[in-house]
Length: 93
Image (cartoon, rainbow, N blue to C red):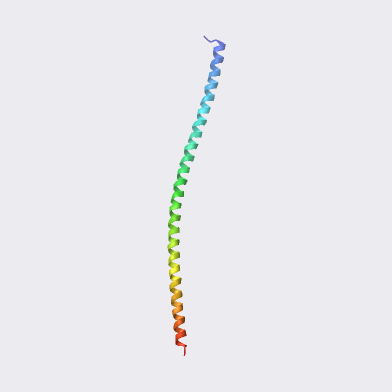
């Protein structure tokens, strides 16, 4: 039963099994990397969504501030015009 041909076949089978084990180990490593990359991608998407929400809030606040500034400028111009009109009225004689 210790035939050299059988021993050679078993040796070839062992080599093939070793190679298969190595390939499966590499596949598992690649899968772990993909899972890690997917988790990082999800985290980045979440952070981008949060940043987008904050950016929208800032845009709304900027629009509100622009309206307030326009109103303030109009009030200041009205007060300035009224003051100039009053001064002109005082010096009309």
